[in-house]
Length: 233
Image (cartoon, rainbow, N blue to C red; front, side, top):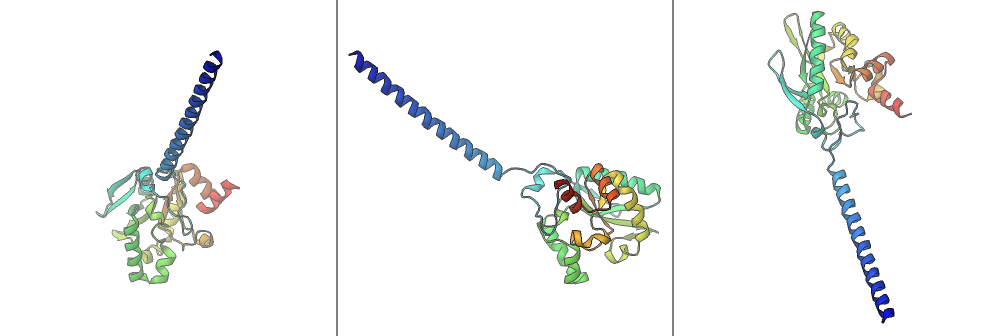
């Protein structure tokens, strides 16, 4: 009788252990599914050193990681821009006003459809080759980060916001480029770095990366691509 009882207890324990094992496996599977779902729907962390160019696509759900705000410049033109970028731009603008140079935001954040429209505008005004040299395709354009700013100038009582006119204002842009690292901005597409960026020189396009990175990039006379590559080596 005792032997029968012992066998029954042993069998019960085995059944119980088997059930525990199955529950653990089920829990592990459920946990794995949950992690995978979170990974697929994850919101990227805010990253002021994000690299977006012809070979680096803007991350999915990027817009959820930044705060894009609305603004209006001196000329009454509406724009959208990342919040911290705008706060630092305001400080840079105040600095330049002291030097009797008035800078404004002509354009910053664009969604994919707006970037596509901008490319079409460039093609109509400047031609296909020019549009390619100066603009990235939707998904591969820094305009979609809200961290890049296309400047406009108010000079001698006139609004200057066209590419061809900007190239006549080299002296003023040099003044801007000389001080903007103190406010976290870099010249994104330098004249002597076309090979590195794969975009033509754009003195009007500045990019917010934060003060430390901006100062390092300016002092070393390098691009964002070179700066990030250097960090990885």
